[in-house]
Image (cartoon, rainbow, N blue to C red; front, side):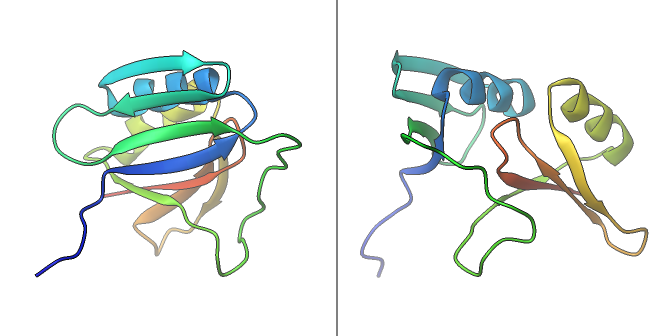
Length: 117
């Protein structure tokens, strides 16, 4: 028996609308910008929503981060095409090892996310 279910994953940033648009382009779905400090993306298909909130003085994390840092793992069918697309959207490649099926990127606000196949 669970106590709770995942409703939303919230990401700190300096520009919620811009970061929401980035993830909307990656994941699809509906983006609702509430105000300058809050946006919510309801991705296409199943899964929790992503919230983006303004944090005054936001400083992007570094990779690899502290043990408390979290990141998104996103599945892709074609890693080469996916990489080209996220780089065109403003992501930065942080780590790609030939022996690893995951590639690590930073979103435009500096948060790490992985594309795997």
